[in-house]
Amino acid sequence: MIWIAAAALWGVAEASFFFIVPDVLLTAAALRLGLRRALVLCLVAAGCAALTGAGLWFWAGHDVAAAQSAMLHVPAVGPDLIARVHGEFESAWPLRLLLGAMSGVPYKLYAVEAGSRHIPLLLFVPVSVIVRLFRFALTAALAAAAGGLLRRFNRPKLVKPFWLAAWCLVYLVYFTQRGLI
Image (cartoon, rainbow, N blue to C red; front, side, top):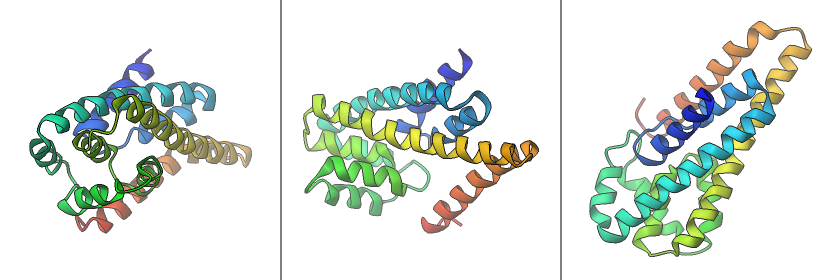
């Protein structure tokens, strides 16, 4: 039950103002609980993130300047990312949402942009769930596969250090690209 609550809260937090992705928790779950249970947590995190995205959608629909200004207080979010997302909504925004999820563009920015453009909420939320679930499930599956390989080669003690090193590397690269390091 604690894992489900953590996935729900992390999904909400990261979809709003937190900057560490739920994948950190979801990959840990895949390594500790197995892929099947981690996929349930992925669905919980994706659903809660999409509901939070709906809240940002409403906010931006009523006051886009305030919503965008608030996003600028999230670490590693700058005007360049807001402008990028704005430009990406010119065509094929669902595909852009997927590509953004895979390239480190925060989901929250897409939710704000969708609200500012009045993209139908009944379209945005299901697309959000699908896109978030895809990314979460992919990272959980990769973690489970890596953990399985380490265990297969009789290196179970390397699972946790591998997980920690992988996430440290991900954020080192991301923060370096964003000019924060």
